[in-house]
Image (tube, rainbow, N blue to C red):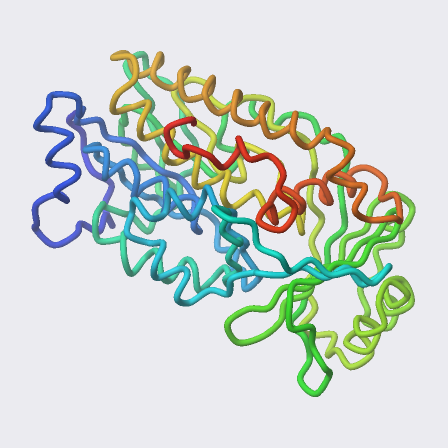
Amino acid sequence: MSGTVPSGLQTPPARERSATSRDLLADGSGRDRQTLVVGGGPAALATAGFLDQAGLDPVLARGPDTPDRGAVILWQPGLVLLERLGLRRPVETLGTPLTALRCAEPTCSWTERLPGREPPVAIRSDHLEAVMRRHVADRFRSTDRAVASVRPNGTGVVATFEDGVEEPFDAVATTQRAVVPDGEGACSQSVCWWSFDWPEGVPAPGVATEAWGTDAAAFTVPLEESVRADLVATGGAAAARPLSPDALCEQFGSLAAPLGDALAALDGTTLQYRQTACGVPGALCVDGVAAVGPAAHASVPGGCLSATLAVEDGWVLADALAYGPEPVADALAAYADRRRRRLVDVSSALRDDALVERVSTDPQPPLDGVCARRTLAFGHLFGVAEGLVRDVPEQL
C-alpha cells in the first residue's frame, strides 16, 4: 500500500527478508499488507516478528512507557511458537526452567516430570523484551511516536500519531485495550497486586512456590539473578489496599513464614503496587483493529498463561492475514474466531474442579481461576489438559 511514513520511523538496514518470508511470498500465498502494531513489550514484539515472518509489512509504534521488571512465565505452547522466531533457545538460556512447584501451606511439593511435557520458563520481563529486541527488532520498521487514535477509512485504518501526522494502514494490532474501538469490555472484578524482589540476606525459596488463602495468595518464582514475589488480594482482603511492608506483613505473613520474613526486611521503595481488572475485553477485532496480548484477554498475577496466550495471538494474527480470507476484514474476523475458540478451550479446561483440588484452602473467585491456570501451566507435573499443548501451533 502507499502512504506517507510517519517521521521518526526507524528502518532496519537494507537486507532481504528471512528465508521463511521469501518462501511464503514465492508460493503466492504471502500478501504485502502494512500492519501497524501499537504497544510495547514482548506481546507487541512477538506480533511484529510473526507478521514479518509471514511476509507482511509490520510497523511497530511504541506504547506508553511502563517499565516492568516483573517475572514472565512462558508455558510450553509459547516456547514452541517462540522457536519459530529463533527465540526459544535464547529465552531458555537466560530464563529459569520451573521444574518443581512447592505449596507452602499445607506443605506439599511436586517434582516429577511427565514424559513429553516441558516445564514453563520464568524470565524477567525487561530481560525478555531485551532478548526479543536483539533478535527480531531489526526485521521490521518502528517509530518512536505514540499513536493517539485510529479510525476506519473504508479500505483500511488511519492512525493519527501524537504530533497529528496521519498514516493509512491495512490493519492495526494493539496490546492496549483503549485503542480497540468499543473494546473496553466489562470489568467483572479487580485484584490488588504487590510485587517485589526478594531482599538480600533473607533465605529465598529455590523453586517456584505458592501460598493460598481464601481471598489472598502469594507466589514466588526464581529468576536468573533473584527471586520475584507477587502478592494478590481480592474481595474484602483488597479493600484497604495496604501499601507499606508492615501492613502487607500483617496481611500476608500468615500464609508462609518465609514470606513474613521477607516483608519484614523489605525496603518499601522497592515495592510495586497495581490494580488489575479481571474483566474480559468486549471484542477481539473492531473496525480493522485486532486486539492482541493484554488487550485480548485478562491477565491475573500468578496465572502463568497470559504471556503464552499473547504469543499465540501474534502467531494466529499473522497466519490469518497472510493465509486467511483475501479481504482484510474477513481475515481479521477469522483471527478473532480462531482466538475465541482457543480461549473457550482454555476456559473449559479451567472449569475442571480437579485443577483446584490440589490446594485445601478453597480459594474464592478469581483466585480459584488463578490456581487452575497454574495447574495447567505446570502440566508437566500434574498431567492435565494434554490437548491444550499438543500439536501447537497447528491446532490454533
